[in-house]
Image (cartoon, rainbow, N blue to C red; front, side, top):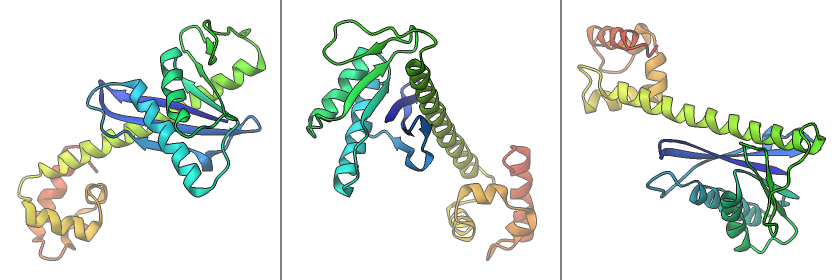
Length: 211
């Protein structure tokens, strides 16, 4: 089965995570992360709809098997968003439920009230593990994106580094992260980079905590 979670920063940089469990164990090779597109503000329902749509569209296009169960982190509204996405593909053999955090209630399609499983039931413990793993994966991905944006911003603000020199650095190292991790000697190795400028860049990066 799979479990879906959404992470956002006050409606910005929304991401989705999807983790797979097989035989009660995480199957990390099947984990997926999603950059949510086209959502102007925090909208968990739209984000879940997008993740579920993209996941099953890809499974169909690649001819891969479907999971037996889809678990959504959330309540009745999140469940409805997932069901709407899956209805497009007509997947009657795939069960869908949601697990709400506050009371650990399980929402099932067609039932007006949630199911409350005993706190120590193996089923609830497995759902919690999947939900917590999806949440961890989403938070990690969100943090990585935020850190990358911060590094890129720092890189863009370096004194003495204009557009031409910035392009030369990126061509030489391949990414802003690698520029930030470079030693002074490695920076001096950039074609056309004066040693004095390389040392000044390195000093700024260290002052800013980027290396």
